[in-house]
Amino acid sequence: MIFEIEYSLEDLSATVTKLLEAIKHGPNIWLFRGEMGAGKTTLVREIGLQKKVQTRVQSPTFSLVNPYETEAGDFIYHFDLYRLENVHEAIDIGIEEYLDSGHLCFIEWPERAESLWNIPHINIEIIQLTEFSRKLTCNWQ
Image 1 (tube, rainbow, N blue to C red):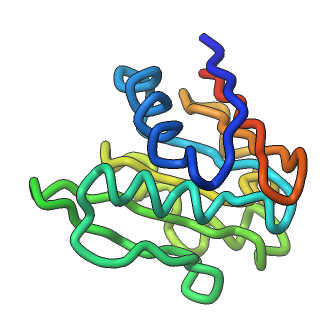
Image 2: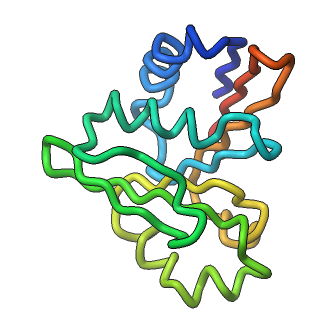
C-alpha cells in the first residue's frame, strides 16, 4: 500500500489524520526518513497529539529513545538514531526489545541501522518541496 500527500504546516493536523487512517492496520514499526529539517520530529509530535500522549513529544537526539504513554495506557517509543555510528550501537541500547514489545515504535534516521528493518514496518518519507510545503510518502514493507 502507498499513501502520498503534499502538505503545509497549516495542513499538518489533517494530513496526520489521513495518514493514521491509511495505516491503522499496519505494523507497529514506523521508520521516518528525510533530510535534516524536513519535519520528521514535527510529524511525530502531531501523531503523538492525535494518539493522545500525555507528555510533550520532543526529539530524543541525546537520549536516543523517549517513551510516551497515551491516555489509554499504551506506550509509544520514539527513537532518533542520528548520532549512532553503526547498527551495533542500536543493539547495545536494546532496540530489539523495544521493536519486539508490540508497542508503536517511531524511528527517525533509520538509515543508521538499516539491517534491522527486515521485519514488517512502515516507511514514511518526508521531502521538503519548499520552505513551507512537504511531500509525505508512506508504504508498508
